Length: 112
Length: 112
Image 1 (cartoon, each protein chain N blue to C red):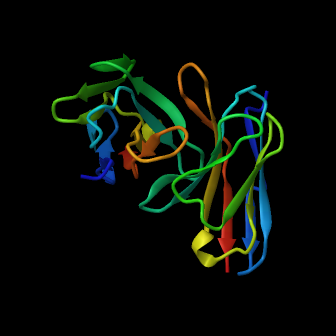
Image 2: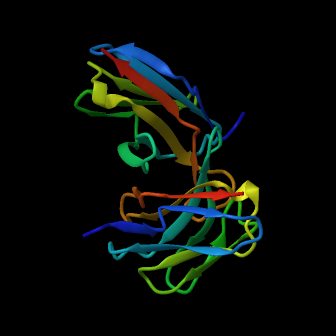
């Protein structure tokens, strides 16, 4: 299994829909996880951190399933402005100072 | 308060040319990182600096050198550019308590 795997999408959903993305990880010892949002041709920005079973912030809910080693991001009542790529970030098994591995991202397109 | 500033934003090089990407942060963070982002690959760590005066290799260091000039500045140098180094380069610095990564706006490099 890759360290971090995401469905690349794109997920095309109508405005107002609920959409969920999954991210699987291989390091069973990972304790903290992150979802970043990246707009087209922009830098990634932190959307949510997940330290325990989950986290909720308005229309966004992140859930962690340690037994199956995946985290999910649920977006309710999708807005046009939610269109972006969502990056899953988990602690890394391999080297690197910050020990974070980025997924390749899931692209979301919210349409009228 | 600019956060993380990268220059240049765009650059076109010919194979074999050299150049330096500059990064500066005004967040008073100790650590700074350089990533590259390629389609379908996710962000990959090139080099990192845990503190002023120290630098270490990340996942993909070959073909690059770095300098941590002071606490604020961390530069990335390509001594002899190759087409495989065509990419978007991001400088980032983590918040010490939360680990949230703050990115610069990115530098788009094309090597012909």
